[in-house]
Length: 210
Image 1 (cartoon, rainbow, N blue to C red):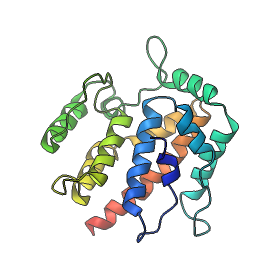
Image 2 (image 1 turned 120 degrees about the horizontal axis):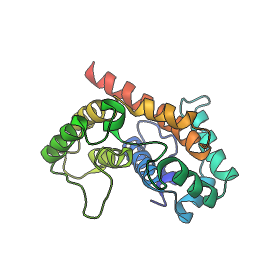
Image 3 (image 1 turned 90 degrees about the horizontal axis):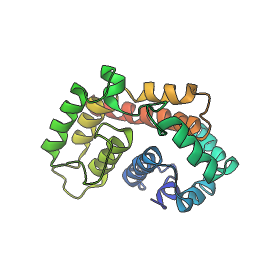
């Protein structure tokens, strides 16, 4: 994942747009799954923050996110991650779809997701403790649906269906919850970028329906 941040260059539709989308999903997956490793954090600190066209929608939130990376140490970000998503007992924030959609963990949204993943030929890797509706896992599936080699599975229609069914109903509320938490700093900035990126994705998928 060390190259993920460098791949986001606010690409135009004719030069690596799909690769850039996949890399952003990969970056989000990595950062929501665990605190950033030193190599990835160094990539974030030197990432480009200016879009080719002034005022591009993602430029502000991406710049704020990169700014947080430059301002905070990697150890501080690790401590923040544990404070928000880890620790002993109940975490402050549950980054799971079932929690936001159904109000508790391991509910029907997770069952529906597992049916979708089975239809795609995907399953939870051995050794992964988080259930499949964790935001990191869902972002990783989107990355696969964009960048995978099997066009029968990895295609725009599959991306749209997965996004609308398993991400769109709850991710904005997750981002709002993170942003409102008093311990959030790096992850408040990441939540702002996540919200904006998903808004762009939603708009694109709506146009695909038109």
